[in-house]
Image (cartoon, rainbow, N blue to C red; front, side, top):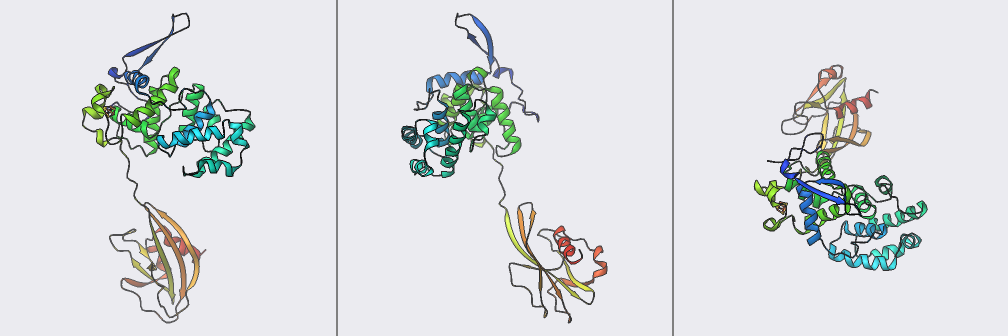
Length: 368
Ligand code: SF4
């Protein structure tokens, strides 16, 4: 049974997930407080102690080095990122050195990593940090640095300063969705809130750094997208996806429908107090509503009179569609032949015809 995730985002723990006690001792060896972790958290921390990756920035307390590693790894594989981190730290060993460099120097060092806005933002943030007199020591302060989002702020804050903030990235979504059997789409606001609340709930406040790194490593090396190592998984006993056969189905992503762009030209033609309208056909937007002469992606109609442009490129946004529309007005002395489906109606009766909001915009231009 999946862990219940009520709308508040607060996670109700199953007792089987919350049965482990970790006792933290003071320097005299006596217990000074008792931390209760979920069995998931305990198992993950143990796994990390044994299988955590050895990386050059691991174990350092320098917020600058940690930050550089997090920025490099945002869109770079770890093998490539490792070499870049070593070279970058050799060339700019401190945040002051980075702040003092020219943008060209920074970009040269970044060459080959791509996504150069990362380097530019980092350079600008280094100057912010130097102006502040050092790294901010709060999540809000870190978040205020150029290019630093929730994930990076939590990662740097927890690893450099021990701040109790869960760093939630794609690895964490995957691990939690599978282990807790959560099928809320991860690319929705509700999903983001749900997983952030759960990760924060599982985070042991006195071991935030280890927990965040454990989640990253576990997702990257054990609970991987395509071939998770369920047989040797330390949390297999309590993994909902494994027990319900949904490992390959979780996490869930909501399919984003492609936004379609359409180009319309509406021509309001008037002849002796009448105008041409048609009822929109079935199988398209605004079925059954009325509209003036419409041309989609084609040449304007020959009406035997001048077409006056009233507005060009009016943007009208619908669900999954963006319409870019030109409005025209034509005064016809001789009644033009109308395309099939159109009919003349008295302008005085226009109020009797239901029309889409877009057509109302055209009428507003004609009768302000
Ligand atoms: S049992 Fe498999 S799916 Fe579940 S957490 Fe472990 S590796 Fe991931």
